[in-house]
Image (cartoon, rainbow, N blue to C red; front, side, top):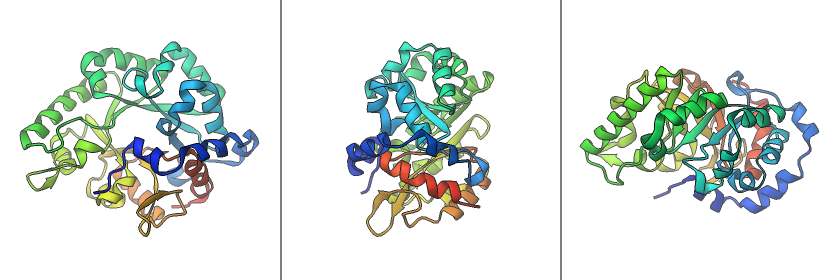
Length: 290
């Protein structure tokens, strides 16, 4: 079965060559890149550039801005400490905001780990608020690979409570679809069961487009669950090669996806592939009309 975690994105798409490509990007080109689909800025997830961030966070953000990205999604320095983001802890929230602002990008969203929220959700919410975030996402609820329905109910109950606490602080809690969410329970996708169990007001969803490789169709989900989504992670996908490709150089119907995303409630989107593919996706996204 095809699985595509963030780590596997990087393994399968040639990270090192991509880094070299982005390093050659000039800042002047960024001035020509403007917001497009859904009338939203072109965003990117910083997971694929975590090694660069570990070495030079301000410089990496400037390079992403130069490549045409206007909205940045971070990963928490606590929950992703061992993945290259631990160094962000040396910056105060005010310093992080200035680094992002100086590069000309916005940042309203970040991924957090379930463990860090279990240990100190109030503290992580305070950090998020100080950085200027309005969205706190988790990649997965970290349930078992072969869950029973009770496992799914417990996970949903726990996350509903987290969503309630976040909402009191003006933060929208959200859920990605990876790992546990892609499992099956009682003949149904765990992901679909979670739509039934998670409170629509407290938890929104962030769709991982590359899960098309596991049969998860973005447009179908956006239309099936109107208003339940807040964002999506964007990857191109070739039906012929069964591999990740730059957006616009793939076989996905992006007009259909972005049109459906409006019904789904998507407020922002983040490209998430190796740097070369992300950079190559910008011109297509800049010109896409829906």
